[in-house]
Image 1 (cartoon, rainbow, N blue to C red):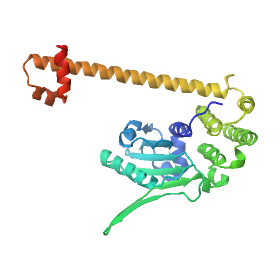
Image 2 (image 1 turned 180 degrees about the vertical axis):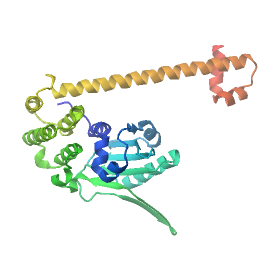
Image 3 (image 1 turned 135 degrees about the vertical axis):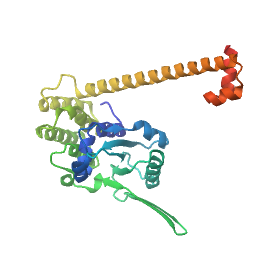
Image 4 (image 1 turned 90 degrees about the vertical axis):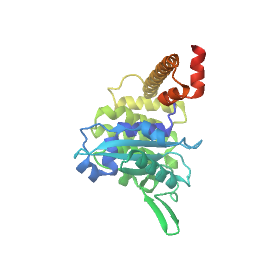
Length: 309
């Protein structure tokens, strides 16, 4: 069965269901303050600029989201989902660094939450503290450890994000990983979602998360799961869930490639425009220092332009 990394699944579901996410983790504040009539803005570019590359072998699902409140103000939420089963001793420090960098660069108030999906009950960082000669820094952030919760505690009526949390909870139970057990709880959760009458706009993402968060071992189980889905969701197209997700992955890849090509073309046009401008300045006897200060180019760049003249 086609595998999608857990961090990719978390990132996708957070974008698809961020309203439900807020109502799940911060219900009182969200109901009272959030203007759900305005779209959330996912600040992937801003987050990429301040967060260094993840350590090799460690996968994170980080999201920085702009939320608008009813009084017209904007707030930023830093969401970190830890999706690998390991203990990161520097995690609290990283959360502090992320928060500090965002605040320093963008001057925004940020609410931070870390969701732990691994199974070690002894691992639950929630604070960074540093002290020296009477000077002390204490940074506390919201946390949620799925392993610590029961299924009853994870289920919030009328909120489909509960299905996501229950899926992650099942994945931490050794007895739930065999194909037969998977078949039971996956189909049960999908039925639960469908019978609750939630919006069908999010159905594909919900099924994607449930289907791929834990993979079947046998191909026969995959086929059986597809058939079971067709009875739960009779209006589904004949295309199987695997093909549906593969098609979606292909669409996303195509969109990303298109974006990259556009960026490359823009960069090429900008570079050529800069070269043309430098040529004009050279022809008009401007000094190299004046050109460098005007266009913020290097000596090597000017030499390259001269060779082309």
